[in-house]
Image (cartoon, rainbow, N blue to C red):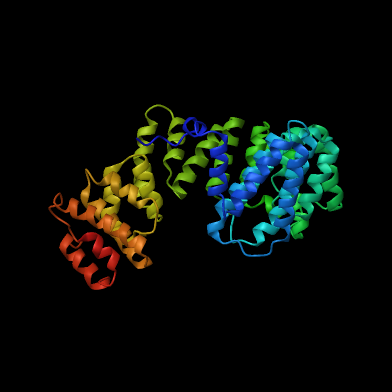
Length: 447
């Protein structure tokens, strides 16, 4: 009877047999043999581990060949095994040497990543894990010396490998290390912070200063890293506004959000929070209603209704539904009506304006599903828009999704007595056959 392949059963084979098996299964496997040699070094002592790891670093540094995608996972696994050996075989007795080994491994990252097409995926994640692991042994470094290492690495880091260093090493840096790092970065910029036109090196130092300010809880210093033109961008204004609100500075957050252009949902949320914090109820009500009229939104309407006197909210809700029915942004209106939820209103909107549906809108499949049970015709009209959009995109994957939507239309057809001005199911199917007869994956899915 076969035994399970587990540690207990393998130990029963004895050390000699296990050693023979290891030699046998790693024959011709350079990566596995390297791992075994490193494990043997770890058994011998930290100096041997460090020496053998540095030999491996040297071979990685000298390599020039392209790393194909199929090798990425094996390489990432090796990186993590090296980190594990450093943590287990070196760090307990010599944390300083362990940090040096991890830092040296990070410096190999740019050359490794240049030999791949790995864009923030397997290998990049492995090196990010190395950075996270460096935080423990970094405690052995004097904070100022650690800050100097980070500054030099960030300034020279063309591949952004060290961008996360301040956050990963914030604890060993401490207040003194962060202050030293700030001084280094300011000196590197020559006092020219927050300029719109900057070199890549200056941008990296600006980002470094923002990280330091964030880690130090200094909102003003964080804001100082942005130019007026940058602070007028909605995403940045919303980020800075949220920080100011967190610091209890609602008036400044409000001014910043109101100055941003173009107006958007992100800055609108800051305006709402700031007016609420300042107790400016009438201004908040006016902003919420104006915001809803510009773009129907269930959350903002609920907030607005909560501010109204008793019974006024019923009339306001009815007016909001009328605003949605006639709103030029069909998809925003449909999103509001299904989120509220007012499924009858959503169905009415679809029946009146189905020809304006943009099939690529990502919310449509969910909305079709919500309407399916009680408003099958509206659901079918939404799915038809999605089907046409998917078939026009021209890929096998989208063809299969389109077929699934068409199957749902077929199932709903039995519940629809009158299609009104819209083609019935068979007519729509015939139109698809004429226009997309060559879409093999679509039709095969239907068979």
